Image (cartoon, rainbow, N blue to C red; front, side):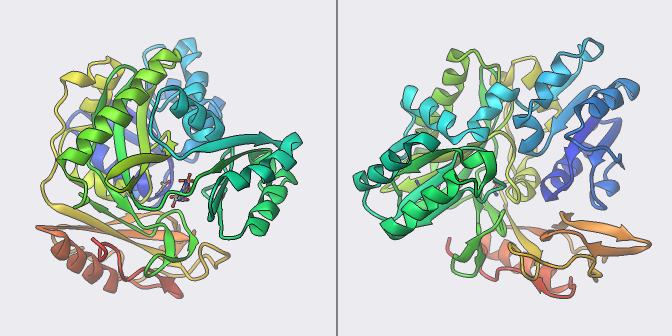
Length: 424
Ligand code: AMP
Ligand code: GLY
């Protein structure tokens, strides 16, 4: 099969690594990719947001399958665009259409969906710019802290948690005044849920869903979950507190009703569905849906997935995921993100990266995120730079070996968290 993977982060390197290991993969292109994906296939300089160019490329290279890594092209309708192209009638597309991607693209849509299909989530209210007074009054129906969410995509920054009502009211006014652009013209106010978060990943074919390995992400920049939110500073899979009985609740109360709800709405959702969950007093609640894989969760989920990913995506296309068995590596996988100093605020690019081309020790992998080749030098090119993944017989082993790998790599102002996995 000839495969095109769209995206350029650590998630895409992990997906490219997994796809290139499939016996049925004959050609793999990554657009635009990074120096890590270039080790797995051929990078193509194409923007995932240039739908016309993506379609032309698929026709000219006779691509069999396209996998869309990031949310933005999905929310903007790349799947619809490719599906409508008569020259691409046989193309397998992994990634939902714009209607399905609304689960991530509109928080108000996701909340209304959950409420319609009785999927457990925080109590909420939805408000538009004409309802500022009502929105601020609605805060009184909650106890602090207050959770304020911009409806649309805001690169992971659209959720504010405010301790005081005055601060919450100012946050609401700021969103309505355009602080998050159009994404904040509608907002969701939500009850604060106090618990521990984990991430569930499913591949769905529009009728059935297969669960992939469960993971936990570490979102804050600082050790001990302090400081601002980031895209994710590390991840672990499996998650020790997610036992079979919790997983059964997740399947019956959340995954199955979500798939059934999509069917009821007439949405044929084919692709990855990432459900961010929070465990409150033993019960799982949905914090958010994403229409794609997580980053850096993919850097531990793909290493633990033993089943051939291309076979799974073909089964997804043929709507027979109910017949597929997901085989997982019983070991623990852990990843630590190396980030540029200053991230998630402003940071410098172009720092020379030392040590990442070393022969990595057995059972470890370095996935590239924000990197670039400058002549023959590998340099930093983003906030999140490299994900250092290691397997271990248990969490402690995986931790030790991931941090040993981290110690071999360096660049100016490199930063990372020292406590990934240590709360588990
Ligand atoms: P989201 O973009 O919806 O995933 O929100 C980003 C982060 O904000 C989540 O990972 C949570 O840590 C936090 N968060 C969102 N909603 C809530 C909530 N209702 N209660 C507590 N924390 C929340
Ligand atoms: N790591 C969280 C995300 O990908 O949204």
